[in-house]
Length: 228
Image (cartoon, rainbow, N blue to C red; front, top):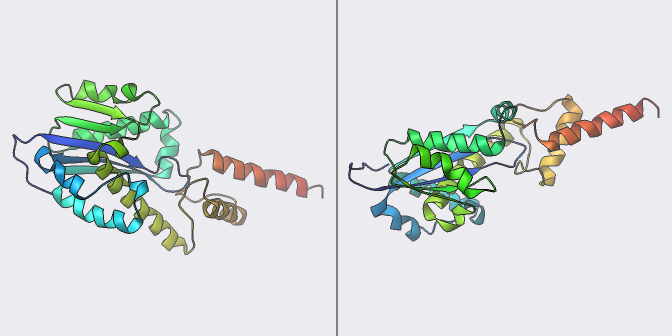
């Protein structure tokens, strides 16, 4: 990361990766860059991480870190998500972590761009307006497509989540897919694991409907087997 002088204006972008998956962590990144370096993001052709190949994300990750004024990343495990969801919505969880990461940056931002998780963009950004009263706050849906600094945060979060999924797959020695409920590889892995172990591993979010449906499916099969 670069050394920053006190008079430099700092732009921060905030985004997450892994909000929807049933497997693996939610990863949130706050990425800070000096205004004078913001053009470097455009030259790197950063964009929403979902629109980039894994190879390109890996390349950009190694290029984004050195030009950052600072950045903070939080990995929220499946177990932590399940525990927090007992008292908070996922929107509130994201909002609180995004705010904390921004406050933990070593420099004070002059502008903050947030990929809003809430259907109400302004409501999602309101806590930032309170905590950073001197900063310009922009809270938008699809901010990772609109603002390069948010794209940078998106790429870092996605890269680090991908790494965690690879670690899980390598550890258990089989393919688990992307971790998203719509992924047939992920769903088949979950069914196979539950059928064999009668429980789910620690990296699975048990508060997800996907998990409850699998439990129900096997419970109904067990009841039927008692009669037929």
